[in-house]
Structure formats: C-alpha cells, structure tokens
Image 1 (cartoon, helix red, strand yellow):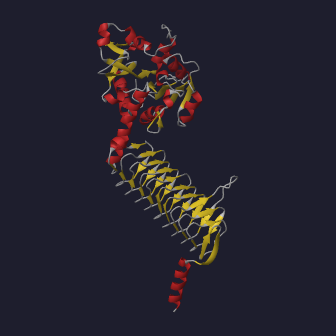
Image 2 (cartoon, one colour):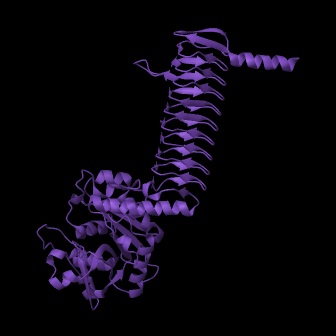
Image 3 (cartoon, rainbow, N blue to C red):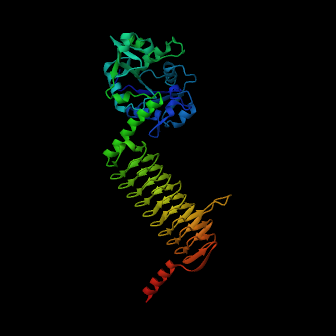
Length: 464
C-alpha cells in the first residue's frame, strides 16, 4: 500500500434514527446550529479525499439539501444495513482499482480530523486490509464488543456475546479504513443472517482479516466516542461542542462571564475584548466587533454588531448595529433594522425595516417600522409609526434633528421635516415642513419649531 494512494471518504447518513423519536432524520438534528452530518464531513476535509460520498436514504432530499457542494450524495433506496450502504457507495467508485476507503458514521459529530488522520496512518503503516477505530468504555452497554486475535478482528453484538465477551469493554465505534479492493470483494459476499434482513459492515472484518489481516486503532480522546442515538446523547454531544466553541473564543480574547449559561453557535464571529454576559444566545451569521458588551440575556440571530456597541437584555434578527450603539434593555430589532454609529434604541422598543441615523435616539417605549430617521433626531417616549392601514404598509421619513413629543403617533405615509417638532400626544397624518412645530390630533403645523428658532438665532449671530 502506497502512502500516496488516494483516499475516498464515505459517510453513512441513510438511517432513520428511531431512538430519536423524531419526524426528522437523525443526521439533520443540529448541534450548535450545524446539522450533525456536517461536522463529520468537515472532519474529513484535512485528509484531502479525492472523493467525498454521503450515503442518504431516509428523507434523502432533506439531507442532500444541507450537504456542501463537494459532497456527492449516494442513494440507498432501501435501508438494509451498513454493509449495504457501503455497497451502494462502492458503486459510485466503479472503475477505481486502488485506494483507501474511509467509512465514517454520520452520527459521530465529535470525531476530529486528527483522529481520522491517525487512523489512516495506523492503517498504512500496518499494511493491512482493514483498520477499525475502537475505544475502551466505562459502560459499554448496547455496543458491539471488539475481539482481536492473530490479525483477525471480530465485532460481537451485545445480544450475541458470551459472558466473557460482555466483560470486554473494548467497543467498535463504527469508523473504518479499508483497502478498496478488499472491501469491494468482501461486501460482494455479504449475506443477511439476522432477523432484520440487514447486511452488517462488521461482518466483513473477519473475512478481510483472514485474507490480509485487520487491526484496531484505539481512540485517544474518549469524548470523541460519544455517538448520537437519542436526545440525551444529542444534548451531551452539543454540550461538548459548545464548550469547544466557547474555549476557542476565550483563547482569542473574548471574555465569557458564565460559560455554563452562554450559547454560541459554530458560525458566530466575535472580536477581541468583547464581553459576553450570562444567558446570551449568539446564533447563525452573527458577527460582533471588538470592545462590545453583549447581554445579559440577549439573543442575536444573523445580526452584525459594530465595535464598542452594547446590547442588553434584547433580541436581534437580521439587524445591523453600528459602532458605539446602545440597545436595550428589552428591545427587539427585527430584520432590516440598521442602527448607524452612535445611535440608541433604549428600553422596550421594537424596530423593524428601519434605518436610524447617526446619533439619533429612540430611547423608550416605541414601535418604529418601515422608517427612515435622519441624523441627530430624538423620538420621545411612546412615539410610534402606524405603518399599516389594513391593506398595505407605508413608510415614514423623519429628518435630521427632528424631535417628537411623548406619545406621538405618526400615520404613514408621512414625512417629518428636518428640525421639526411634534407636541406631546400629536397624531400626525400630514407632512410637517422642516423647522415647524406640529400639535394636536390631527396635528397642525402652527409655528416655527424650537430647534429651528435656535438654529436661526445662531445663524443671525454669526451674520452679525
């Protein structure tokens, strides 16, 4: 066997996963925001396989939808066991005479590229036909026991094991390296000898061992042995992955005050010297800059946060929070929200599809939807934009330096001009010209606004 012989990776992802008690295929369940099968795919990448095949079956179309473009799905129309799954994958490699076939279960999201590399190194250095990844478990209940004798490896299922074999704590982890020619020949001779009518991949090990030897490779990191077969194991695996993610961020200069209560998905990016407070959930494509304070109890999904911003006790969905912006507590930034540098959305506000200009403030108790707010504006407590008339949504425009009194209702479509004011409790359904004060319900522009007077006085002083 040559060190340069090509590697082909096969990931087994066709099963239903009945112990999950789910309407969704097991490998589609997510851990830290990523489908289980994708962790296994990523672990194979550093090995540079010439072919990456994913055997799909149950909910095949849904599984295919989450696969990366370079992963080739291979359909196992009837789920007849792991041996049949490998047989189907080998059909995609017809004509390939030599190489190493790496077979990995799709329900092992904790497996590392390092372990896969070590397995291949063991396989090549031993010059054998098959190598099996094994681990010694404290509690091997329900797992197949591995017996290795004189170059032959057998896997004995627990229900078929003798008393002495059950005392053996060395278990099969369902991860193999095979010489391509050996596995192709062995799989072709598989027969079903069980009540389920399935073809087990483990049955080929003894055949290959008698012909060209088989060896085991013992897993060094025991946490990688955690396979996912039920919800409890899913939670355990996600806890390990979550800890890995948090550790990586902390090594990169992020402070996480309480790792036990902080959930950060694998795709999230965070700048150095940012502090994440307890109870925070950071998900999807969220990106957070440097020197930010996030939390406590903040949930951000696909949200961009600029340097020096603070988001407290709030929720963000597809929002953009600029540098130095303050959000919260208890506010909701909905998709399409853009808060420019130095702006503020304070307590108990909901903002949707709105741009808030530099230095502008929506301090408290407001609903602002489908709105353009200029720079330096201030919206009084209880200001709302009534953007929906029962048939369509309309936009509101608030100019630079505008000021709304408390409990102002802006009935869209409407424009509040630059430096204009509204009185407390005004219901504004008509445009307010720049520099004017509007009061009443319905509001009328009655005189020059205080902001306009101040600016005019300053201009006159400069003229003198």
